[in-house]
Each structure stands twice: as structure tokens, then as C-alpha cells.
Amino acid sequence: GGFIPLMKNLAEELGKDKFDALLKKAASKAAAQQAKQQAAKQGKNDLAAFMAPLKSKDPLWQHLLTFEFVEDTEKAVEIKVTECLWAKTFRDRGAADIGYAAICHGDFAAAPAFNPKMKMTRTKTLMQGHDCCNHRWTMAA
Image 1: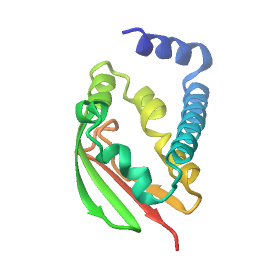
Image 2: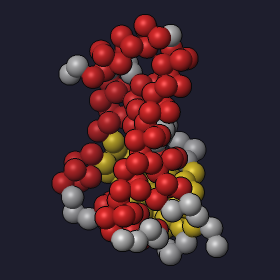
Image 3: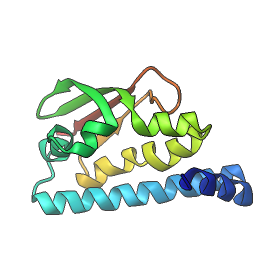
Image 4: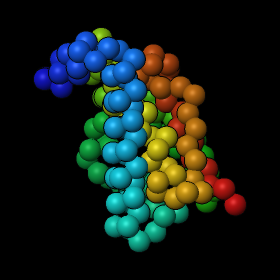
């Protein structure tokens, strides 16, 4: 309801480029903090622990995303997301740029915050109009 109009107004006040940079920075910081808390709560920071919420039957993930595991090993996990409620919501309201900055961009900061040896790569997002999101997490040796 009010989040997207609020963000659009802030973008107008600050200027698009400044707003985008600030939102990405804030989203990355929040994602990193959440990842650190998740690792501390679980007492582990390996790839399996990082993936545990996605693999659980948590209703949040069940309703937000439709995805499949493309690869699932000790050193690499890749998922293909074909439906995302966040992407649909932001895109339907002409705010995909805000959605990407607020929701998607922080994913890159979460992985190394959870474990400094972890890296996430992604070249496509539904939010940006691609046919899927292709998240891939890897652990350095």
C-alpha cells in the first residue's frame, strides 16, 4: 500500500541516483545484519545452514517464491526462481527499480556476512524483467 508511494516520493525528493544508491546501501546493510544474526542463531555458517530457511516448509517462502534447486552440493547451491511475489508487486506498480534496490540488491551482501568464504552470483532477476532469477552461492576452499 504505502511503501511504494513513500519510496517514489523519497526518490523524487533526493533525486533518483542518490535515492537508488542510499536504498541499495541500506538494504545491503540490513541483509548483512540479518545474515549475521541467522548464522549466530544457527551456530553454523556453512552453505547448508544458509540454505536451511529456503529448504524449510516456512509459509513465508512457500508463498513468496516458486523455485527449484538446480545444484545442491556442499560447495555450491543454485536455485532458479520462476515466480516472485515481490517482483510481481513492484513491477505491477511501475517500481521495479525500487524493488530491486530494496529487495534484491541486498542478496549480494548477505552471503559474505553469513560466511566470509561465501559468494553469491546472479545475472538475472524477475524484478528486472528476466525470465527467472538465477541465484548461485559458492564456498571458497
